Image 1 (cartoon, rainbow, N blue to C red):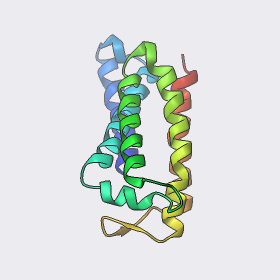
Image 2: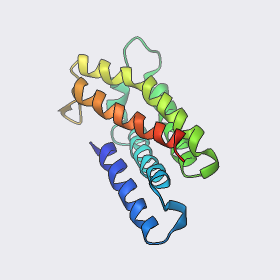
Image 3: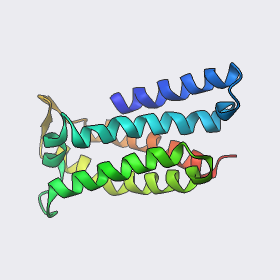
Length: 147
């Protein structure tokens, strides 16, 4: 739920700042870039901090070096978040993040099917996770093809 909150709050806050006269975020497209960047900063932090062990456990068992995969995806998320904040790189960063989310989605499905718990709670059910993932990918695609 934290990524969804970060996306919504970050986008809304950036939009308000834009309406108050900050040209860099004056419009929904740049505000959405900020919201996505915040969302990916939040999700990337989990790859290195308190939820790292949970994320490693989510990696499907058939994949090698889950610890390295979690580190790599965290680094890619951070790089993508930074790329979203630079107008010249925002579109390719958003496209790359959309692909990354699609590539990581099977880990969420695997975790749900294996009945894993994260921080003592069951992982997000597949239906809810799919809806969230579609929203996140749609937001990244909106940045990719937006004005």
